[in-house]
Image 1 (spheres, rainbow, N blue to C red):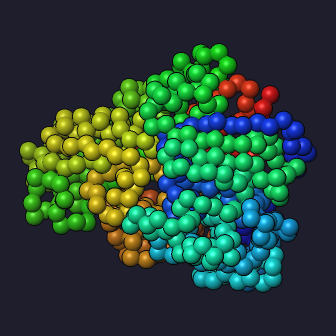
Image 2: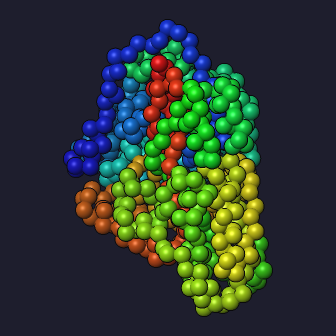
Image 3: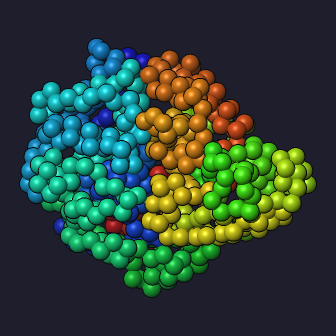
Length: 528
């Protein structure tokens, strides 16, 4: 067994917390800028959607509040004598919220469902050739060659009840981009620590503690009821915490952090976040959808992309827009991801004279027009970042128009390939660069590239990305990662802006440490 596999398997056991569930009922009222996009657990690979799903559903393994790989519905996992077969031992005695037993057949169903073309999470499962139920509590994952990181890809892959899905005609994943409405979009039946009580998308979601949860006694589970009210307005979110209307705020506005920290009865906790904010652009179209340039695509020229890259003053964005709550980035991976180096993450010096010269060399001495599409309720100060960038692009002669939209529309437009130039943020739950590559760099012609809306395609790079999934020699694999990063950086297919700094604000009677993936597993929350 390779050292990498041994390291993965070493994270199997859930530590026995030896904590009894508190007798007192604790209702948690919390808010964030946006809501889950859907309750279908496989439709979207997106942070706030996973946040709600983690309360209701379970995955085979998950990352705890310290980002350690932890046993969920699987109690043990290892590579068999056949290096292409992983065996997962399932937790016994687990039931869904409707009382049905959780078995290996549900795992087989869930994995195959999540491989559907509609599934936003399908890129996590590209190496899986088959899933076999050996018995009720044993599952074999058969992969296309050895896959030492398979468990790392399953932390946000939720298990559904096969019978419930069949009974409610949701065996197929929701077509989110097409606006499909199914029973699974507003209803749920998981094995997780909380049951769904009511759901009004973008208004209010209420959960109650699952008294039959398999984790009773393993986790604090002091929160007995959860009420989530998304609030898009930054000022209103902060005011809600200050007034006592909510107890916990997932994304306090950076401009209000000092006021919140100084307020009586409130505490703010911070940590580096596993998320990088960046701009992407369609570099493959013959002609942009919204531009004064006809018969050509300015973004297809690497000199244009370089000019735009060196026009962005990331330090000014950090200081003025983010109030110091960001780390300027040169690559789309934070420091704790395998493959990260300080050299790759170095930000380019702002040089607007050279930027204008590069535009002239590319044939655009007078610049050109285009539209930047940004969400206004997904990332910290997302619209303000875009406004600042538009101004910076203007200083090199580009006429960039900003359109900002709510995240549900923004992501649907992305998935429908409607955007020339866009903002996106990316976290790396596997803590490995392959996750970045398979979603953002690999072409969409194969099983990967689900979020590669640049339409960049390079067969050689695709082959390198696919090969690293089965490479068990760490030195060889790390060199493969370095080689792909070199190409990504040379091509400048993305314009990284910064790594987010994560802040959570809460009443000071709450004990809850920040999780770098921005996933609050409320079963860990305790009260003083």
